[in-house]
Amino acid sequence: MRIALPAALLCLSLLGACARADRPAAAQPAPSKLPDAAQAGAAIADMFGDPALSKDVAVVLGTCIPAVDAEFPGQTACTVKVQTGAGSSETQADFYWNGERWIAMPSQSQDKLPFPDPKLG
Image (cartoon, rainbow, N blue to C red; front, side):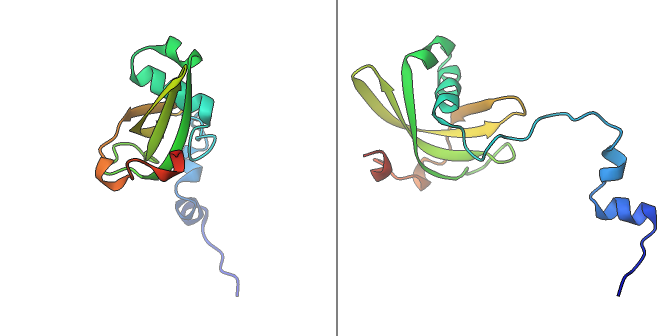
């Protein structure tokens, strides 16, 4: 059985797509649910306040979970292995897509993430 909906109801059923059709796109969707290694490295370097660090650091993401007390849509908490030169350290960070790039911030999810993380072995 087919039911014909008036155009106004159809627009409502499409979550307001008709009302938004004339507006320019505000932000690009995240390219994936998590940053790749280069994106995570740049985000971590920005978090530490040294964008140049992203050239000298290798970042590996370990266990990731939905962030505790998330402030942003899609905010994800991860264990992170940061390698610089011969040394490395493990930390936790939250990542979210701001519409243009990945942002890292200190995590509030430490009690939910494994430490040390066996995935970062």
